[in-house]
Length: 158
Image 1 (spheres, rainbow, N blue to C red):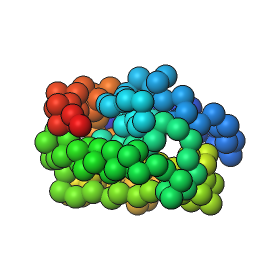
Image 2 (image 1 turned 180 degrees about the vertical axis):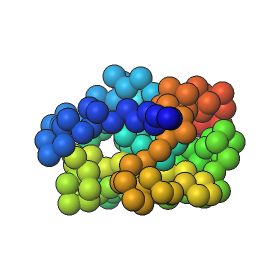
Image 3 (image 1 turned 135 degrees about the vertical axis):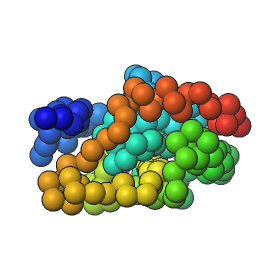
Image 4 (image 1 turned 45 degrees about the vertical axis):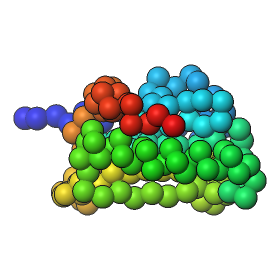
């Protein structure tokens, strides 16, 4: 018998409870940061939808896109472009889903801090387990994915 490892117990234990601490406001505590400067952070999602799922956000707490200063906005979207290049080079996905969470809980987010999801897509990345058991099979641990992405980190230089 084979076992599938899924590091989601913290997430499951907190089901129904909202973490009041914004992960982007305390981003420097995250162990899986790929890029951070005084304005923005790019990190692995701790509860990924797929291998290589990244989160990109301004460090300052903004609720709306139009609130972000022009220089930070431009840097944010330049880093989005570079993050996609990093994922292409390291994980070789066939496509991406990119979505911006604006509006907190009504937008599916736990907090009102605008952020971008970058989800690499692979051929047949949704199978039997995902469809019938509502369980995502992850082919790599977060740590292994982080190590793979770090090999190509120079792609993110602004």
